[in-house]
Image 1 (cartoon, rainbow, N blue to C red):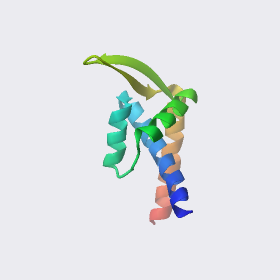
Image 2: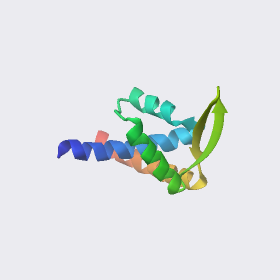
Image 3: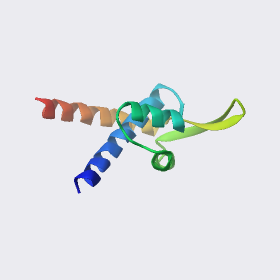
Length: 102
């Protein structure tokens, strides 16, 4: 049970992380997998892509296809709605951090 609960919490953290990076610059899936792994999250393409597709369907992310070295890649970036969600998540995260770290 603990592992399932931790997974849900970490998936929420990963979504915030995705929104943050989508704000910074457009990214493609493999880059995000590596980025999340660099922060200790264990995530596969089979987990990440459904998250990205759901965030796109929820209009938090938008996509643009680019051809790089003959490969078509889908780049994700933040929408206005995504920015609003990120702003609120940042505020709530600051409040939570300040409360649990004291």
